[in-house]
Image (cartoon, rainbow, N blue to C red):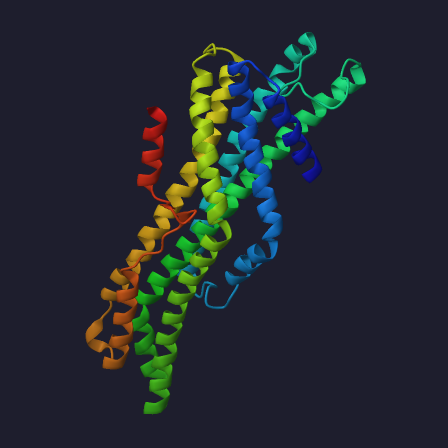
Length: 340
């Protein structure tokens, strides 16, 4: 699969830079720039494989596992969202591949042209060589589309799981007084009650710190690739819009260009939307703690909870290359730049 992807990328980029016609260059370069980005993503996933496995293992820790029906409902809701988003992205990307290749097969056969790139390091005049090259490009584009979906939904999936953990944390904070009442009911002595209370508050604080550390690890692993994706997608969006202006609205080329444009917009939108959701939900922790039944809390526990409220005032921020904070505002700014 890696060989198909990297060979597809190499042939496409070589073809771009041996073309002298500006319009043809823009048409090909707008695609293979994103293909180059996918190759970088796959390389990054390969190099950071162990770190990504560690991230998934963090979600399996006892502190993150749902403990009651309410927490199970929260986890299922976010898991369902991640599944739906993955399916939608896959449909969108495969639609773009369909319009670029399968839908135009008859045209390619009649004109003896290739779907995306005309440069290969061998002669394609024979039927066997032509069909082999056609198959290579079609499968290469499919691999590229699926690798892109896998990468984008992996990152957004980690953001979704961060949101799930923040919601579970808020639920545990709101139900802490009930847990303390239950501890008082079943404690056998003053020392036992003190130990139970400290354990409950320690678990809450540990979970809070754990979620922040999980988000920091996401930033460390993916921030550079998010920045690369932002840069490439912004460039490709501008080139794609220019290319669409030259196409017939009812042509397959226009359908291919518009679906490809949708793929690029979706990639940026996923990052910005869920980055914004993580930031918003991280600020809700302070409100959840504030909504507790404070009069029944011991003074030492109040001081600890005040530390959580203070920490929640500095929300989690997922960034692109430590430069741009992923938020809805960032997406709007990108869209405005493109529309100009």
